[in-house]
Amino acid sequence: MANILIYSNNPQLAAEWMHALVSDHSVNRLLNARTEYHADAVIFDARKLDEDTTLLAVLANPNTRFLIMGSNWPEQKQIEVMVHGAAGYCEESEAALLLKRAVDCILKGDIWIRRALVPKVIGVLTGQLQSNHNNHLTLEEREKLTRMSKSLSAREIEVANMIRLGENNRCIAEAMNISERTVKAHLSSIFRKFEVDDRLRLAIRLKEIDQYR
Figure 1 (cartoon, rainbow, N blue to C red):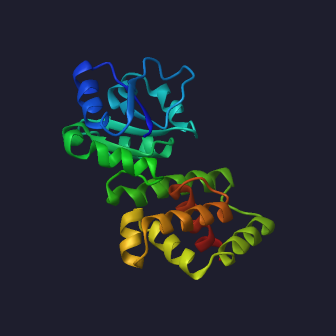
Figure 2: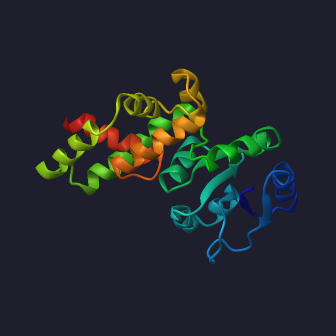
């Protein structure tokens, strides 16, 4: 059972989201996202971000997974919250059917966003990284990327290649005929070897390796 917080000023929506999750998780309201709190995940009303874009900084908290709930948000905004650290985006209209699945997904370390947007998110993050590196890596950094790549087992390479396509753990498990637990174990090993914390950063690291291989 995970500790879930709901951040919204809309009592009706908050009640709906709580109803969808309370049978499986401990669910409470979050009154102020800028204060210190402890939660496995926060269901974050997109209206809060529309009203105050500085709240995007909150999404960078590495100890909490954030699921943004919006109403027909444009793709660019969905990409923006993912770039800032959110674990997913879900439409309010789909909450009754999909919210529990979405929360279970992000709690497992997956991301919840339309598959078509995954390459766009990775592209933006990769562009930022290249900009920070002034579009060049040192020879030592390139050699480090090569060592990381060579450290993967054959199975880990299969998992990594499916991550770059935006596949979730269940799809990877089915494609490789292994359990989701085994997929998670492979991912944990890959994250450790590539010195990243999530699948988006892993995809970026893989693009770096492709670029400088």
